[in-house]
Length: 241
Image (cartoon, rainbow, N blue to C red; front, side, top):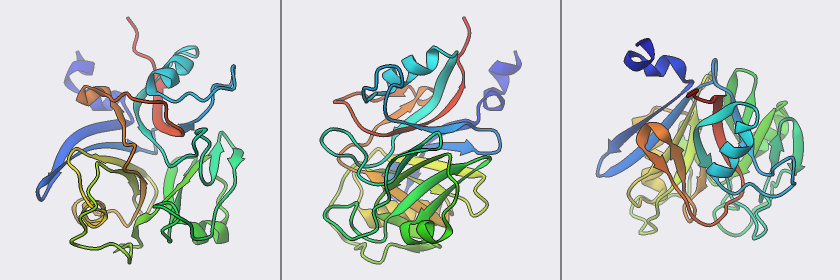
């Protein structure tokens, strides 16, 4: 009965729908003091890229685990290798990229989501290099949306580049990681302000806009499509029965 009345007590990730100005969003927030947040790329048994939420759940299910929520976690090459830094369970599979480059990833400053014991932090890339935190999991993407409470300097208020976008923001103490996907197409400026002005987060990182997907059973969502690269999600014991 308690599970029916107080379901959020059983999960470290809580998902909800929200609205800011004229755009709708879906949010999954992870309590890092209780959550098990991980990134996923390849199946350790086959070496093949997982590429979907169902494949991640299939792999986790062998150990009696399941995703609370999942999201695509950064840009990738045509063979689905991560474009920038990627660390999974302490093992670096792709190195940090610090130089400016083409596309959104290279629109500096970009950043890194670093997951450590009991916390998750978005770092601007050069700050990440300087501080060299020991991340258990990490993924690099870009551009940064919010840097120390300021929007990325190259965002335009009236930009007509509108996409369904997704990204992540973290609190100053690292105890909350907030994952957001827009339901409606938005520009970078609006998306960044959602993190800064509506959610009050000092750091936020863009994941993608051409490929934005969410797995959130609480919201009845399990987005599908062509295989993708890095995936991030919160893990817990699989429901029984």
